Image (cartoon, rainbow, N blue to C red):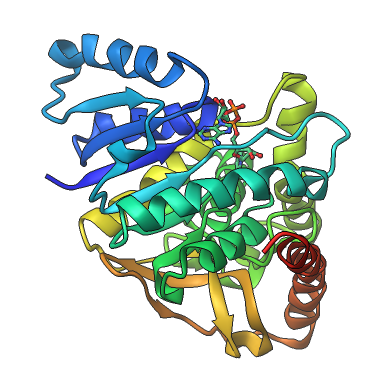
Length: 313
Ligand SMILES: NC(=O)c1ccc[n+]([C@@H]2O[C@H](COP(=O)([O-])OP(=O)(O)OC[C@H]3O[C@@H](n4cnc5c(N)ncnc54)[C@H](O)[C@@H]3O)[C@@H](O)[C@H]2O)c1
């Protein structure tokens, strides 16, 4: 049985564990510094085992050494975005948490593939890469898979069709500058532009960009977690089952799409080694300029991260 450790048993972490458990995908360890939180949630899940047919084990702990020999680590520890708060505001706190988690990951689970979820995830993924010293293909960030499922849902809702029939690709960073690609969006193979007008499509693209913020404003406390948990679990599944699925995710780029030494959301083939391949789409001028804009936002975070590392190596 594969082993997946989830750092941070808050809303996203525990929901990710739930989706993994529901598919009996892997044994799960949830680690959280909040005393008793991970343990209580693990117990609670296990009490449902007879009804939900769980054949996996779930453990909750505040002891990082329990992540030993994990195949996958999902990093969700951090503080969530609050209304009016920019993702970048979260940077300093969450980088500190990511660095201490990374040291434990390097020590106890040196062979794991790491999925960074804590925001701003492209920068957190970079912090994990630097602090663990892992190979670049073993660290990914989760965002595009979430942004594209939101886009897919909005299209399906508009057309009154089954969301699973919509395929879509959202590139770039996770902020409002993300790049939903209408040209690569299809409904059962039919280009979406043949099924709805440009105005409707633009409206749905705008809603996708602000989809996370819409939930933050409604929720008042915290941010989305059901779709983020399902999205992280999707990436975990691709790794533990070596599915080689093509999923938009933040990957470390070395010249792909014209960017270097940063994480950015691109189509990635995901398998047991993490990033098996980065797929380069041929973008038109407008799409490339939108991606440049998004990359520039991520780059700002990376520069701040470099300052943080310079101040405390
Ligand atoms: N990438 C995405 O698409 C996406 C989507 C949703 C949320 N997020 C981000 O995920 C993170 C978690 O969100 P949430 O709603 O689950 O928040 P949450 O507050 O419910 O959970 C975070 C948990 O992390 C724990 N924690 C803090 N420091 C820790 C440490 N050093 N070690 C272990 N655990 C620690 C806290 O005790 C808490 O239980 C946030 O940064 C949020 O912005 C990202």
